[in-house]
Length: 165
Image 1 (cartoon, rainbow, N blue to C red):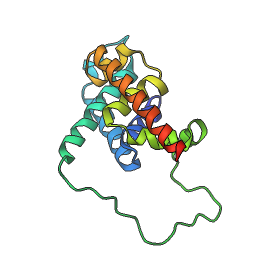
Image 2: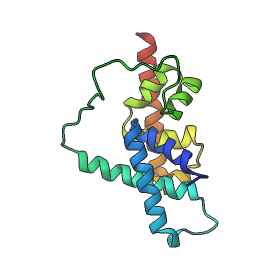
Image 3: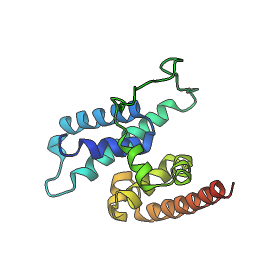
């Protein structure tokens, strides 16, 4: 967990776009890793294995939530004051997005479907091969290529719309 915890959390955060959900997914993924450690094949990529677990957990959660009305509840009505100090919670993805992506790209990435976002993140940010993505997401290489092509086109279209307005 020490070695791969941050990368796992970052991947979960990119999928969920929510700190609490990303933490829950990461924790549950490592619990599953602990329980299924004997099924891990030495010599294969641990990150690919745990990303697959995170992806499956996320899909399960989306299925459970389907049809339920969801609204984020604010912590309180008062504005948050940090007195010039940094908040205690660290947002690694937000820092990455601020450093690497423009706001229109980040907003467009959020607008993609979960499947499109997953393959785009794995291919273009995490730099996994199509074969590795197929194993993580649980589909064929052709499906990965198709989703990635559609995701990139959708991302381009959304970014163009946001920068034009």
